Image (cartoon, rainbow, N blue to C red; front, side, top):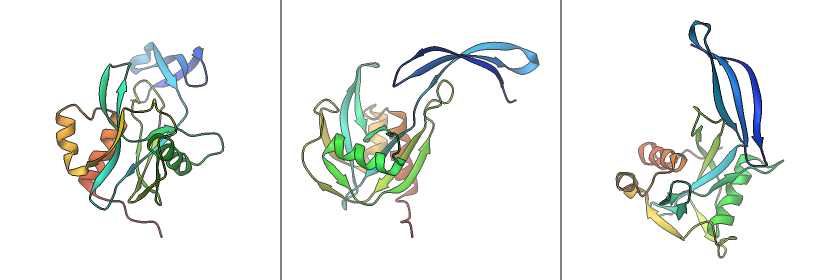
Length: 180
């Protein structure tokens, strides 16, 4: 059944988050107060080299106090296309400039609580242009064999939902076709 939203009220808002409470009608005319998070869309990329390795960041997430591999991903600036944001994020976070980007997968990582959406692209080449723009994004940058992804998931070294979705999709389906 489709839920009906009767109203939304802002609880907290800053430049990153918009936390709300919604009056939602569910089955049988019942209502519930549901919390939700509105957020701006994000974009990222899986970059692969000729050896079948993918460019990943090894980083700590303080909220869950976990370490894991992640693809470069971040917010889309005003007036910026998702593809442009993905390329910018790869450069800023890794120091590598991706080759041409192709759509890989679209992800809504937490649709039960948030309207967050991630546009993930694929590049089959990259040029090293220097150090990452910020030293706080990750502990290290690595080229990791795509073939290792299932093992990394099993070992909980790859736990980020969007990263896992993108890498397992690439692992299972293969490289996307180039645009004409």
